[in-house]
Amino acid sequence: MYLHNRNTGNDFYDIVKKNRSRFTTGVVHSFTGTPEEIKQIVELDLYIGINGCSLKTQENIGTLKLVPLDRIMLETDAPYCEIRASHAASKYIKNKFPTKNKRTPDYLLKGRNEPCKTLEVLQVVSQIL
Image 1: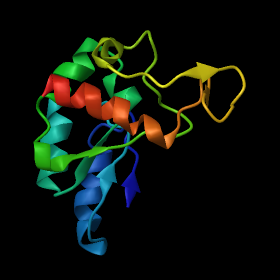
Image 2: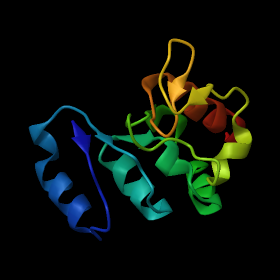
Image 3: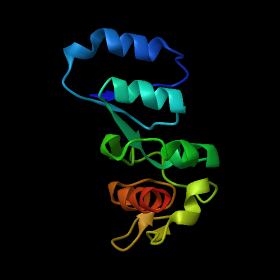
């Protein structure tokens, strides 16, 4: 199950904890939360989805370091949440996919995230951790 948690305070944790027995596993998708939220998610035995939005700021990168390795799920959220040049994580990308304003067999469409860009998320996460 993919779970979204944005600005919910403790409501997310309380609701999921109350209903945790109703599903086998899940991932808190596109995580941009706090160290306290990481602890709560791990307590609920869920995974933490990391994508470009999860790596936007230096604070996000610091928080990533607190996620247990066995709880990380890499994702792209294609066609959204790419790692943009303005993101703190962009400096960690070693191999960027070539883009153009029009998709062709050899180029991705500029500004559109694709599943293959999971490699970029992996590059960032592997260097940070």
